[in-house]
Length: 184
Image (cartoon, rainbow, N blue to C red; front, side, top):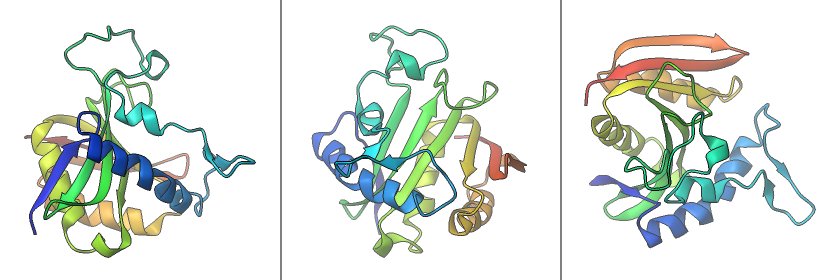
């Protein structure tokens, strides 16, 4: 199994895959105790934030501090498509400081992680995360919805296997959060 992560904001095919599977991911999240997403009368999930993850420039409303569109670090919210043997099998979304929807005291946040059913339990997610953490050394944060037992089990098992340092697990507003340092 050859795992890679592809920049969805740069690669057309990865961007198309991400846009196509995003509603599947949101539908799966809707089964948990969260009211962030809702279907509108046309059957589209709202808010529709899919393009924010694949744009070459992060929308200013999603940043804590203004950044130029020409800032070499743009975008500050990034979707990566996970591939297994060159076939797309999921995605991971990462926020980089100054992304608004992450704690002030971290450098990066894993905002979303999704694998299609046939790729779960194969090690694809863990290998993709290894690549991601190697690419972005620093202080990380992630959160799992309190009743998403599968996600909580995955992160509890996987983070120690990734060799992260200073791993902390907390309950915040009922949800489970992790903070850790990746060395790259």
